Every structure is written in C-alpha cells, then in structure tokens.
Length: 209
Image 1: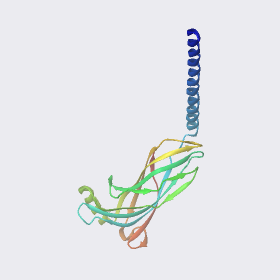
Image 2: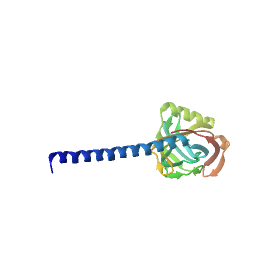
Image 3: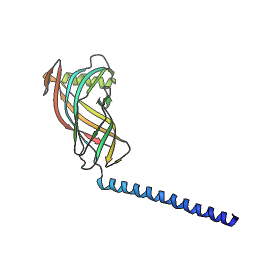
Image 4: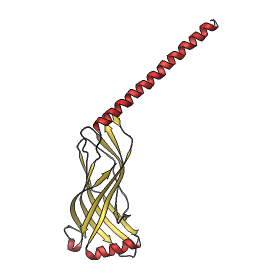
C-alpha cells in the first residue's frame, strides 16, 4: 500500500470517529434536554407535612440543666404531585425547645410515596438527661410551673423525585412543626395511662426542599 493510500485510509477513519463522537454527544444532549423539558413542565411540588398529635409521657427538668423527655408524635405526609413520585431515602425526627435540640434523633424507615398518596408515621422521640443551656433550663422550669410549653417537632432528610423512569438526585428536606402543649391538669389532652397524655394538634408544618 502506498503512503498516499495509507494517509487517505487514516483520514477516513478520523472522519468516521468524529461522526460517531458527535453523534453520541448530540444523542446525550437530546436526552438531557428532554428530561429538563419534562422536569420544567411537571414542576415538582414539595410534600406537605402535618403534625396530627403528640403524646407526652415524660417532660422532667428535675436536675439542674438536664432534661428527660419522652414523646410519641404522629406525622402525616402527602405528595401533592399528579405525575411525580417521592422517594424518602432518609427521615430523622427530633424535638427542639427554644432552638435547642432536647431529644435524640429517631429514624423513620425509607419509603416511596406515589402520586397524591398520604403516609402516616408515629415515631417515639425521647431524650434521657439531655444537657440544656442554663437560660433554657430556667424557661423550662417556668413553663412547667405555668403548665404549658412550646416545642418544635423537626424532620431532616433526603428525598428524590421520580418522573416516569427518571429518578433525580438527592435533595435536602427540612420540616418544622410547632406544638403548643398545655399540661396543667392534663390541659386539653387525653389521658392514655401510665402518665402519658395525648394532645390532638392537626398542625401544618413548614417545609423546605
């Protein structure tokens, strides 16, 4: 084979490789553009959370700057989307008082939520001898004496969206559910036995994704 024929053969190979390369690039671009268009048209709406009730079994600030508490919270989550599912890869629930975490985190099992579906969870959330800032301990003691207190039930997690066969990356989910509880003479709660009192709240939570 002459040098000219060899160079011509190599040139044809380069042209074929370039066509294949740019064909792959264009194909991937079209797929990505299609996904983005579908995503923009459907526009996923974040889930809604509601704190249905909270059961207080213990809330004792007996030792200076330490708190022991035991709650069971009932939370509902609704997927408002018509064509988008939600994967809850991780959800942790805990309770704060005046911006300070006063319980350990309780994990809610991972789950998938279809279109317009509602899930309900009832995790136990507790803390034993949790250190409390001195200024918060004073407020807690006053709240106990007054027979009422205000806490926030919080949810931190990771979610993914499902559109057809496409599944998005993970997004941070944060929910905050305020709970005002009156404990004087059981307040407006229902006695559940063994010093546990349930309070019906139906409190909508603020959610950010």
